[in-house]
Structure formats: C-alpha cells, structure tokens
Amino acid sequence: MPHKDYNEWVYKERCDDVVLIEGWKIADNLMTRMSYRWVFAWVFPIIYIYPSHNPRQWLAVVILSFFTVWPLVEMVLHKYVFHMNVNSTWKKLLHFALHGVHHVNPHDLTRLVMPFTASVPIATIIWYILMLVTWDNKPLMQAIMCGILLGYVKYDLTHYMLHAVKPEDLPKWIPEMSAKWYKKLYAQHRSHHFTDHTKDFAVSYLQERAI
Image (cartoon, rainbow, N blue to C red; front, side):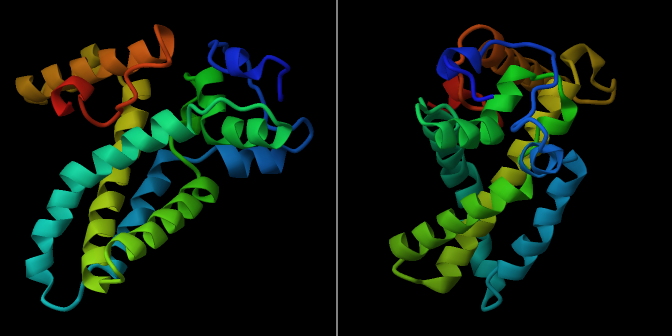
C-alpha cells in the first residue's frame, strides 16, 4: 500500500491483513484499529458540551439534530470523503486509513469503528462549521453538536454490529419489528460492500426510507 491502481484495488475484498505502511505497526494500529468499546467514551464530551443554561429547552434541538442533521453528515462523509477518488500518495494513505482498509478486509472486527486519530479531527472540523452556520450562537451550536455526536455513536455501534452479527444470530428477545429493520439494514450494507460500493452509503439508517 499504496497500490498503483488504488481506486479499483481498494474496493476488492480480500482477507489478508493489509497494513497502512510496511514496518510501521504502531502507526497502523493508531490510524486504523480501535475496539468498539471506546465509542462509549464520546458520552463524556456530549455531557460536557450540553447547554447548561435552560437545558430542557435544548433537548428538542438535540433530538432534531440526531434525526435530521446526523443522517446528512453521515451521507456526506461516507459518499464524498470516505469514497473519494484519490491519486497522490498522501491522499491514498489518508483514504486507506480512514476507510479503504475496511473495504479491503471488511471481516476485521478491529477496524470497524473510527479511531480517535480520525474521529476527533473530523468532529473538530464540524464544530467550527457549526460556529459559522449558527453565527456563534453557543447554546444552539452545542445542542446541534450533541445530536451529531449521539448520531455518530449510533453509527459506529450499528456499523460494528452489521459486520459482527448476522440477522439470524440476533437474540430471540429482540422485537420482531426491530429484527426486520435490522435485516433490511444488514442487506443494505452488504450490498454496499459486495455488490456496488458506489451505492447504499447509509449505514445507521435505511437510505430508501430517509430519501
């Protein structure tokens, strides 16, 4: 890595353990691997940035952001950042670390959630974008960001589950409606990986229903 025909090579599934840079095991671990358990650490910044002044009135904004802003962020990041065409060596390395390695080996459970080395910079960029679009209205910005981060937690945990748990392996106590929803979500994500990587970019929600 990087491969000469990278944009074709990276979306062809294989099961060998491909590394970011040969001989740089520590960098590979920091940039591409993380346990799903660390995703729960995002609860702390969510609590920290939640508006402290009249907190109840901002709950509706958080919920609205979770259901409307996050799906848009997820789609834009997955379609236009994680699936961008790259040509230079540094862009190939960045893309491979962000998402390419996951398509190369989608069965590696240690590479299903985004490491902090990637998620924190992305969250910081979104934070500053919100500062601009909210005209630096701090409580509003914080409430929207809380909804986005909650959506991200849902996204990462859902993504891990879609690769780790088949629909037929769901616990029996799962409600039938939830099991049917998960089965559709599972089929949608498998289609993205194994049928056409240029479609079905939604991960934590059903794309057809959202559209």
